[in-house]
Length: 325
Image (cartoon, rainbow, N blue to C red):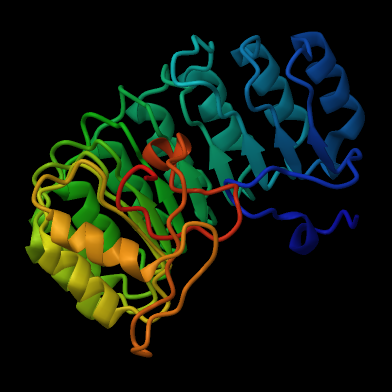
């Protein structure tokens, strides 16, 4: 596997696989802080991607050492469990921003101790960021994310699921600055409304995946705008939204590449619509509908990460209208 940066960037949200070396390293979950520091000192400037996901022992000390010894990093993944108490704070994230300006991917999902201060520094120093995940970050607000997207206009993937303080202001700022956006996760961002999503739809027409699960203020108004402007959509997650059959029909008719709609716990989706969808779909295989502008669909079993993260690890994701019969 080449050490060059154009060959080392991995698909965001997918498991990093392949042959690991001093350029790219996925650490075992039980790696110690001392082990990380030793590797950082050995790898030095050749290090490009580091995956420390699911490791509850990581501290600021380890990340600061990585930042100081590995300034060539383009990707770092610190993703953890939503209920983990990982000790990553502004101290280490700011050091990463200052010492690793080539970062393009950073995953801080469930590293909830960092604040706006760290996000602002990432935006100012790492302007080449294309993929960010700040999910479950309870301490960040519109202030920092808006500042980041103003500087990082090449963002293609944004996940801010379960960020309680994010509002339409952030979504509108994304819409005005991130025209290359293809994926956005806003699951359980309770202050998001049609106002923000309409603006997003009209400006980010390259969107392929959007998660609005739990955004109860979302209605057919914004979903119709997504259908009309984002014709490349292939996965749309609207669990617990305030949408009706009209939204599903508009998406199916306007988005020829549509493969998945997740509408479980949407009380206004009727049983007639569910029944219609089930009659078009075989339980185990894709069945194509007669009209060419309707995408092929398959019912897939409910998968836990659908609710939490729009970066799917399984193969082609599919029409999700409820639990399997």
